[in-house]
Length: 405
Ligand SMILES: *Cc1c(COP(=O)(O)O)cnc(C)c1O
Image (cartoon, rainbow, N blue to C red; front, side, top):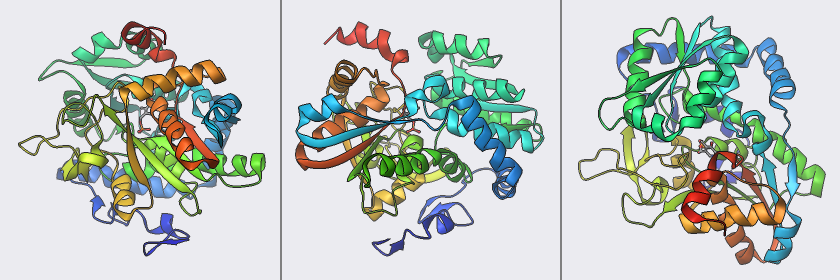
C-alpha cells in the first residue's frame, strides 16, 4: 500500500535508514565513545537477525516462558453498550510480568548473551521497565544494574522489592531532582565506563539508533500475532487499531502489523489535567522538533528549549517526547495521534473492569477510553485495542485518589 508517497510494502527495509533515520527523525546524537558502543550493538543486532539459532531461541522463549501468543478477546458487553461497533483487545496484560515490556527486554537480554556480555544496565522511573529487565536478566543469568532516582524509589516500593527479589542491583540516584532524568544520566555514565562488559537496555522505542528500530522489531510480535488472530477470529481486518503512546513501544508493536493495510491507526497520548504545558505529556500533539536523550523527534520543551516537565496519571506515559518513528508517521499522516485526559482514562479503567472482568493498566486505559469515544463516532465496524498491561500495579493508587466509581 502506498500512502503519501511511502510504499508500505517495503517500509521495514527502508525505515530506519542505515544511520537510524526515519525521515528527519531518529539518528544517534551521542558522544564518540557512546557512538562506538551503539555501532557494536547495531552490528551484533543485524548479525543475530539473520541467525536461525537466535530466531528459534527467541521463538521458544516467547512460547515457553512468556506465554505467547497472547489472545485477542472480544468485548461483548462493552461493545453492546456502545452501539454497533465491535471492540476487541489484544491481551498483553497476559504476557508474563503483566505487560508488553518483557517482549523487548527478553530480546535485548538474549542479544546481550549472544554478544558475550555479563551485565545489563538500565534506568527506570515507575519501575516497570526495571522489573521487566530484572526478569529477563534472571532468566538468562545476567547481572542487572537498575538506576533509579531516590524520589521514585520511595514512591514505587513494590517494584523496587520485585527487582531486588529477582536479583537486580537497584542503584539509588540522589543528585538533581532525583527522578527519571537523573537516573538516565547516571545509567548512561555507568554504561560508557563499562561498555565492553555490559549492554544498555532501553525501555521503549527511544534513544539513539539502533534502539528505536530494535525495540520496534522485538515488539512487532504483537502486531504479527494480532493481525493473524483477528483475521482468524472475524474473517476480516479491524477497521481501526488503537494503542496508548508514552515512548511508543507497545503502539509500534501492534501498529507495525497493520501499517500496510487499509486500517485506520490511532495513537493515544495522555492529556493529563489539560492542555497547559506541565499538565500533560502529549508530545506529538503539542510538541516541536528537537533533540534529547540522543535522538531527534518531536518533544515538549520549556522556555529554555530543554525537555519540559510533564504529567500523566499513568506514570508509564509521562515522557516529554515519543519515539522518532512515531514523529515520522505523525508527520506523514499514516497514524493519527489524539489525546484523552485523566478523567476519561479513570472512567475507562472502571468500565473495562466492570463490564469485562479485565482490570487494565492506567496506561492501557487511555487506549480503551479513546476507543470508546471512537466507537460512538464510527457507528459501525470494528476496533482492536492494544491492552498493553494489567492494572494490578495501579489499584491502590486509583482507590486512594478516585475511590470506587
Ligand atoms: C511502560 C508502559 C507503557 C508505555 O510505554 P510505551 O513504550 O509507550 O508502550 C504502556 N503501557 C504499560 C502497561 C506500560 O507498562
